[in-house]
Length: 190
Image 1: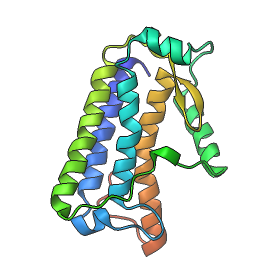
Image 2: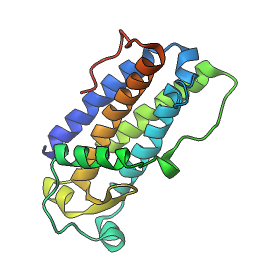
Image 3: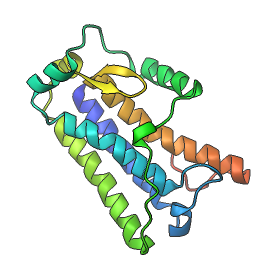
């Protein structure tokens, strides 16, 4: 996927994600799904994972090089990266520092609106940062991922795209397991 296709895919996934998260009423948005995170916790986790990628892409490339080096291998394909990530999750990989805090706000409607605004902002900022990168530089520079290790910027963007989809799938699977039914309003994950 080239840079422009990545930007378009991330924009579409943000739209699909917002439609999915907006389908929850306020109480359901903040309610845990069994022992799993609530939809609001999931969105806050996604914010915590997208924000540093967008910020990293605004750092001068010389500093990225000094801190993380450059990639010396061809970029892994989207499908290969997803397969490797799923394997790490199956082996017990966790969100770690990217888990949402246990924070709560009294005005749930305002808090939900704030969470969703922040989700839109970090996704918009990420796409704007990507637009300033060439395809060659997406493959040259790398960033650290807590489970996958050092990834080229392109691979980190593949991960980010998948991660947004993955959490919709996780919430839907948890809801099905808890209630025995799927959500009628759930948009497709991809």
